[in-house]
Length: 230
Image 1 (cartoon, helix red, strand yellow):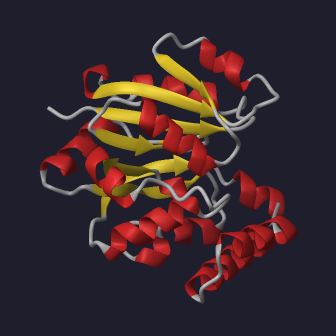
Image 2 (tube, rainbow, N blue to C red; image 1 turned 90 degrees about the vertical axis):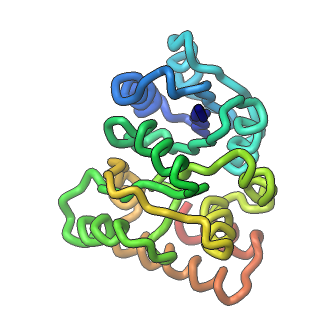
């Protein structure tokens, strides 16, 4: 039977990582989990101290950059299925069973539908739309499961991308018609929307999406994000 390796990239996530690790333990069966790997990109807060309190969690140190961190975690993992999860997202109960059930149906990659932890009407609508298997409704906040074999065949995350790396992988999966959406909700923090502003951030995300569609490269996208969002 296939087992899941959970890979979590972090950078100064002391407010979220402990809650997520407890949540994983409470909402999955350890017999389905090969390993849990947290990959730190240079945290200066208490993130690594918190992770060290979990005996069954492996902590790796990496260069900063989620693509590099997730590739490193994947390389160190042992499971036949990789599950990439953001520190501020809580997957649904029995997420492990749901993923393995889809894998058993020959679905090699996919995500969960999403629910933001916000009652703002736009974020509720955006969350509702994630139940549909449409490419514009996808993003890394919905988490990503993928067989190790397919991940290797694609070449992993493109480390040229300091942001948007999730979407580059998702683009490739859609191009290969290898993507499903599990109709259970992962609860995701809306913290960036609250920090930047909902309409401002949504505008910039749309702009980045269109820029990439029109051919912008990794540097173009990063500089736009750095100048307008970060």
